[in-house]
Image (cartoon, rainbow, N blue to C red; front, side, top):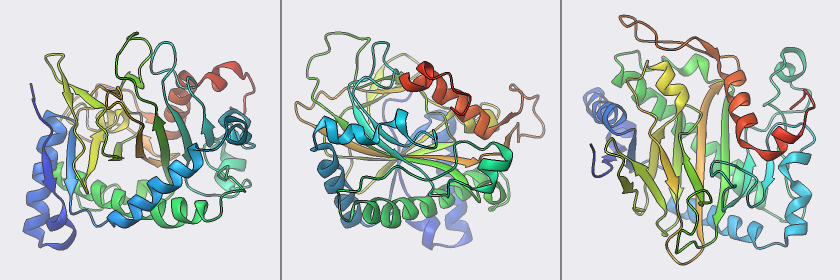
Length: 323
């Protein structure tokens, strides 16, 4: 029945004592069990770096549709869900979402051993523009890899909050499926059709999401009463929310909460979500030893592939087994 999303100072977890880490992880555990969403401040990611990523996002989306479609996600050579998603490509809203995006993930070679020999088709190279100097370096080399490091720290906090060893998740996230998105929402000041929103009501697929929002409001989180609570942007914070994999992993202790985006700001909205999943072959099964499992075990990569298949137009249209 929450009416607001908690704000947690992550600084003491990163830089404090064991007692500090335990205290912060307890706060995070409470938020994961009761809300499924929280903000973190003092997370160690430079605001200057984040601002530079937004500038790169604006630079990318300001291009012509013809130029952006050269990297269409449906024509990505490896079929690993990287590249440009045009308006209405995603179908979290029934009629397609009012947003466009650019997707990237861990940079791996096309002949990656797990991909070629074991069928981990979500691994592989990214689909980069060749006309935007400095884009890849800022987006991937600086920001993406920084967010990977922060994500590992969040996993440590989750482990402590579940009374597990600090490094419990480390062995299962050595080659993590972490998707970063640059998102652009046009203004939607009036909702004329509930089936066509900026991003329809949904839960995230992976373990958790680290979201940077621009100053424009839009994200809304649904509480147990069915009320939509605004996740108002707070400067120099990330919104963290639990995804479906972590809800399964924790046997529903952590909540993957329904949320949506309606850009009612009257102006363009940008956001940068980073969806943190474990290794492709990590087994997601109940880690609460004294509870009866509510879900069958699943292989993380297979589960995520199916969720992508259910979401993207190009994957539904393409019958090639490599997708």
